[in-house]
Amino acid sequence: MISLENLQHIALLIDADNTQLSKLEEVIQEISKHGRIVVKRAYGNWGKDNLKGWQSELKRLAIKAEQQFDYVAGKNATDIALVIDAMTLMHRSLYDGFVIVSSDSDFTPLAINLHESGIYVMGVGVQQTPESFKNSCDEFILLENIDQKTPAAAAEPAEKPKSGRKSKSSRKKAKKEEPIDEIHRLLRLAWDTYQDDDGFAYVSNAGFYLKRVKPDFDVRTFGFVKLTTLIEAFPDRYETRVSDSGSSIKVYRCK
Image (cartoon, rainbow, N blue to C red; front, top):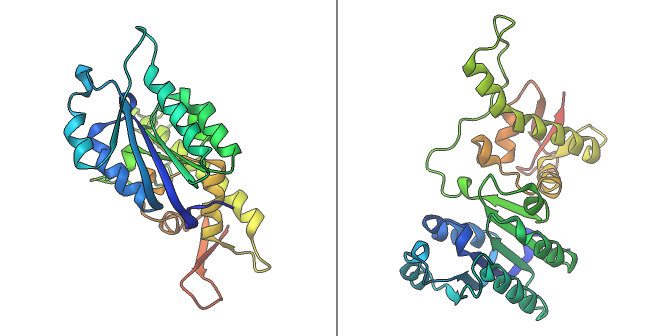
């Protein structure tokens, strides 16, 4: 079974029209945490004004620039070229992981096809990327979380309003906390599934489960570095301890 632990040959395919040049080096550093990148290609019509700044950066980072002219106005030939190359590379059976750097939902069918072929699929894009593309990947990394200089404030349990009417700031705060509520729900489901006879589940198992059901899950979204620290930040919800195996592996249970 393909997983992040044994990715040896990763193909990195970049949609230059739908990603941030300023994040390019950080994307490579992020993906390199998961395995060895053996193919690095960026697709675009490099004659366009909005892509003029890419040339020097592609050279510096040793990324192969794939030129694709717009044969017909209004049609994105770049996307088609990326898809064709991805399918060609897939049929070589040399790569166990594909990374598609784009925020374009048009790559959803490609990600599904690669996934059905047993390849680990990672997407990289902005938070606003359509859910269809995010969920078609095994893992989706948010550009906002890469090389984050100032982590987002850790999510805290919402304070009860003093009156029946919420202030404007309270409404904004509640809106930001909605995603963490979903994570709490999934952590409970993982605990229900993986708990042992003592009622504890490995945090690592919960992490794998979260990635499977929510590919864009990233603890950095909530201001944490590890899933363990996120869980420990809510002692009213979870109890944590070191595993009885004598190692530093953490386990948790819901209250």
